[in-house]
Length: 268
Image (cartoon, rainbow, N blue to C red; front, top):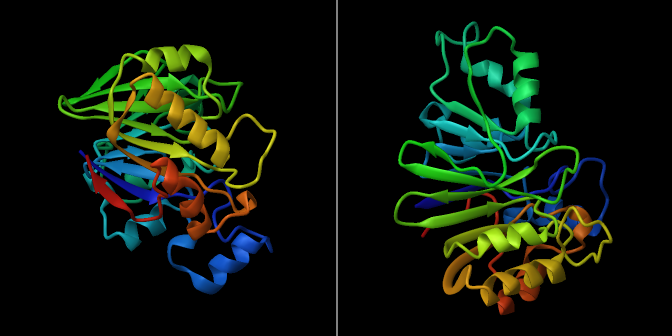
């Protein structure tokens, strides 16, 4: 299974809009891995996770074609993950296609907004619920509940292809006990997990900082969900986290966690 991190930034990216934080200034001056677009991923070249407003630029940068997508899996309805207006460009009158070649998977809020926005458009929309697996081709995708957007069933996704098991966890927050218990039944080959708040010890429970990220991974190790050979990368880094890429590496690498960056591709 091959995972490409199209974007690894939080809601306003890095450098952020209207921002003069040290992290934003550094990214403007140095570029490279410190420039982060809004978070999204691509699995095996055709399973798309989230549709942020930066999608068009990400696809151009990595020389990818959206016509290769067989599915879009939405985590939740925050605007940096769910740019609903972008869906229209898949169909007539913007091009000759009368139907989209991809299936849209999302929670009740996502599905409701799509149906409201496109009442007569021929999108195939499948509602997802936490802990209830869906089958998409050879993949079993199981949403788990993210402690992030509490007015909807926000998701992280366990993706299995019959050989490998991968968990994509952006906007996880501190998972509730039922999630950790559920994950005891899995052994992950790969994990992508958020670290939005970086070195900023925030009191907000809907995102993780470095200390919390390490604690979550260590708990997964203790319960056997994460093994010594599990590949672990971070995503969804915010400029208010007060850490550039190198500082994140210094904080996370000793714990066996690698720092993700835009365009990173790895195979498990």
